Length: 237
Length: 297
Image 1 (cartoon, each protein chain N blue to C red):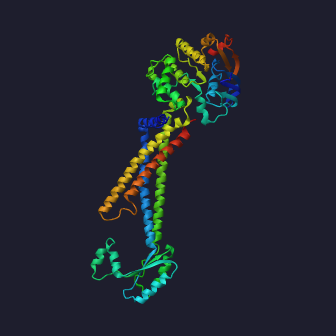
Image 2: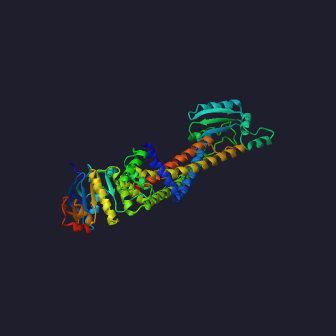
Image 3: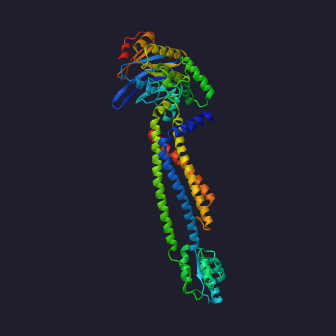
């Protein structure tokens, strides 16, 4: 099976400070993977590299078949349309309703999608995240968990090959966080590779999924699914 | 697809422009002023250009005034002499009656012509000189001829044409300098208004970029917003330019005088259209410069 994400000796430095150091790993389709590590370990840097918000200082990085370490600024949007992103602060457009936010994520990627198709697909996506009845609500009318679900719906409505989430449960209560994780498991079951950066140690240990552990920019452990990690404590550090 | 394209680019830009009209107002005002000045200065320049053409033509036409008692053989000799000169394009004889008739068509002179019982206007040989620089030489050639009036031999006014050219050149330089200054102000103000719009919508821009919106979709509405500002300023300035010119032409025709050489309703309409196009270009161009400077990729 061809990897969706491939890091090969990727290093990223900010001036003299090395945020990510010689990182190697691959993500396969349908794989739900957690990215853990203490604050400042390089989790956000790694996610930003995947979404091509930054370039690696050295090494090779392939995302959904595109060489993220080589592509020009003019092709970044094309790469991002192959990657769904969920942010801790949701990043919904406040002037659009939940359904319009989801449809926006779809039509931004493909202008050939008609309004009717965008409406149907965005309602389907909202239905899938349990918000089929809140399509006309504006972000400020939704709770944090609901906003995060809208963000997930927006991220997956275009059926990306990869979904990355940066602390998606950071602003949610434990019950809502579990609902979010159920959602990510479903998405992975559809064949999408899902990479979740998190501090939530309970989720990481109970779900028994693959765990990548970063410490001071180095990938110190790549723990396969099905094992309880000895270093899971790092997620809460 | 086309519908979505238009909606994303133009619909969004129009809504945003209307929403941010307060912050756009200074750019709109300065651009309207610039375009209005451009239109008026452009029309004035066109009129001056036409005037220069008329003056150039008139300055190369030398009237050689003949003595009232000049003998026909002497006049004929002078005529042949001029015609044989390679610098001369043509010679026309104008008798005293024709000179009087011509004078009566010039504002102010009919009263002078009517004030005297005799015809005060001399017969002349009107010499069309090929190059304006040769007019002085032709004047020197004929000035002391026996058939020529010794008191007022020719219409040659040394330096008159050069003085007109100097005035026109000075006016053109001043006009361009004024337009350059106003253009700089308008572009700067428009760039700042787009910068403010980018700043106000930086979250929205970031989200669009992060979910994979292509660059044209992120930047396009700002360019369209600038173009809308330029177009609105252009329409206002164009209408004022046209209105002022139309009023000037109408007022001049009522007074039986000419408003400005070559300025007609058609020319005024063309100037208004050009002002609108310049506004569109200026608005979208300023936006593009501002985007290059202030929007991260």
